[in-house]
Image (cartoon, rainbow, N blue to C red; front, side, top):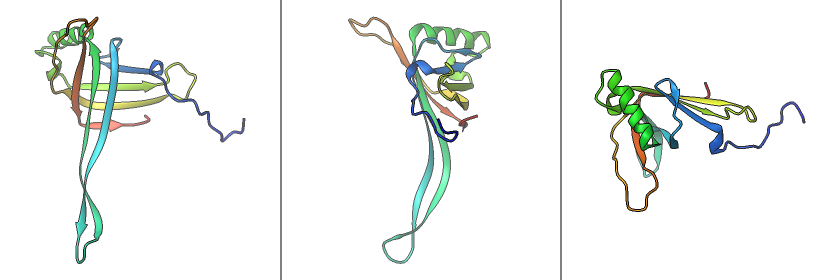
Length: 143
């Protein structure tokens, strides 16, 4: 294979680890995060935009965990002097391709804070998955 070529393998769910509070979240079902920048068209004479003005950057996302994982996170929060996970500033480390088959990529979501969570189950459910939406101060990609 030529030196500058690349492998077209993509990351699969099995290739992702998310770390928080110093450990891998084993009961993780979903992770997503977004970087957005407020942008606005600037107009002058006529009806066509003349430029694009940029504003604030926002980082947000969510993780979905098993009920037992949330209980463990809340217990760790209490041991650190907080009421629950919504009060704990987290650095989330998202590691893609930890198996070594594909080039490893690591993203760091800095100072993420969970804004809410809702517990519940319905008849027939076999387990409970809980979404933890968060906002964060920064996102470092490919570190």
